[in-house]
Amino acid sequence: MKIRQNVRHFASRKALELPGLRDVVRPKLVDLHVRIFAEKAPEAKRAEREDHLEGFFDATMDMYLAALQEGYTEASAREITHVVGNFDFYNHGWAEMMEFPPEELSTHYDRYAGFFDAHGISIDDPLGEFRPAGGVPDAPTTPEKLDDATFENAAAGYEDDVYVETEDGEVRRGDVEEPDDVDPDDSPFA
Image 1 (cartoon, rainbow, N blue to C red):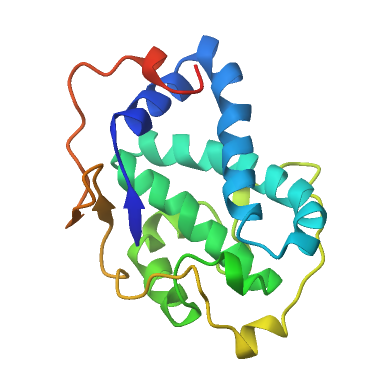
Image 2 (image 1 turned 120 degrees about the horizontal axis):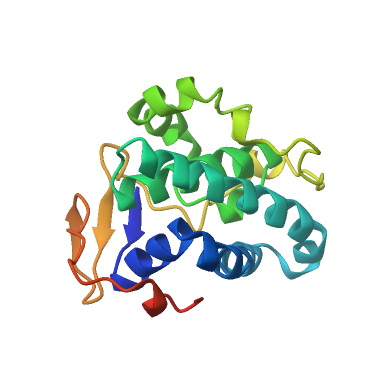
């Protein structure tokens, strides 16, 4: 999968790992993800998806932190959360929100099968044990969209590894090495 990675991602990671900043940064990161993905949806469908997206992305913050604690790099931990997001979009038929085409779902699952299996995550149950006790708000599905979709926001061909687009637009295989001097206060959300 192709993702972006820069010092802001590392700073946000550090902020999420600090109990004092976590409560400030987490809701802002959730809001950012809701906004980014809701904007890919048809305007008439955005409002009805927002509560679901908020609950879903909030749960993926715990998944991200668990992946980091299990030794995944920042890029891989973040990619895990994007992969499960795409599982959820697929299950809802939200083709326009998918970041990779559906024929790559299994390949992305297989790359992180160790993490997914350990936490009860599957394509059909993208949150697994990270599902909140009260669940995630429902949202209308559009499964018929998958049949004729162009998947306009999906980037194919990045299913074998994490690919990082740097700030200068270069796409490279593998993540960027974390700088030594990352300050959690450099997170745009701190």
